[in-house]
Image (tube, rainbow, N blue to C red):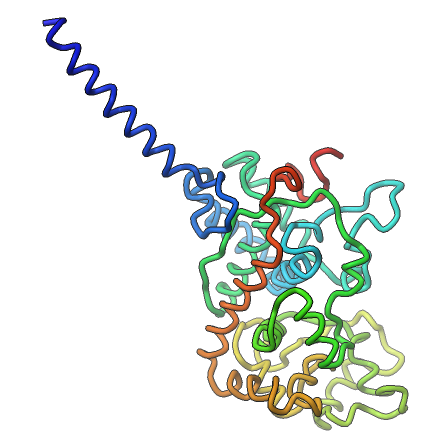
Length: 342
């Protein structure tokens, strides 16, 4: 009996060994250097739902949070790639050690406490697994989807940078940039014209401060006159909201029609010169926009489906900017605000 069962046990052990190897192969999600949609399927399978639940709860007390988190992902990816660098706090005693104080982020970028809550929830569920950079990518997709926008398969597997890049953050796309500068900044990170127009469509929800429009209302390009591309009725409306000597930090809807929904009204607004930011209206009204960005604006204004499809693809394109996957250069932060070595 014992002698005859030995081959059976050996065969069983061999089969078990094969199954273990197969299981290990299936669960090698974290070992791949390439971004994949199933990166956390084995190591943190509920990551998406955990992020989603924290965001839904945050939105109950902050209707702006979805737009703010989407913007954080933008501002992260345009500085040394999508690596969570925008989340790092200043290092005590080290000048220019945080991107949060760069002009485009200072007193403007928001949503950091919600990211902290997401990170804490993920650490409870699967410690040391999900990077802060991937949290931003997931939060952006979930925020857009929950606001009525498109969904897409978020590619994951980024590591977090160990330091911020203040100098590069000073060169983020600005509300005051003309079309030529915008095209140059997008091209510098490998994004093309359709990406520029599609990603700008994220301005279909959220709020913006008066300081970013007062120049267009009262002193466009030093002329002491309004921006001629600004719709006169919309200009009068904004002048009431942003008087010449009013608070520069007063908030206004980027899209006065459906300010909390992700839809294509951003483009229908541009068609009638109701873009809030000068950089937005440039996509339609700049002389060089004709034949370049203006036709894309026209297409998206006519077809929300075309916008949604292009936006989803452009978000994937942006998420692929210089992904940090080398463990020698990156890490999974325990706290999104500080590098692990700090």
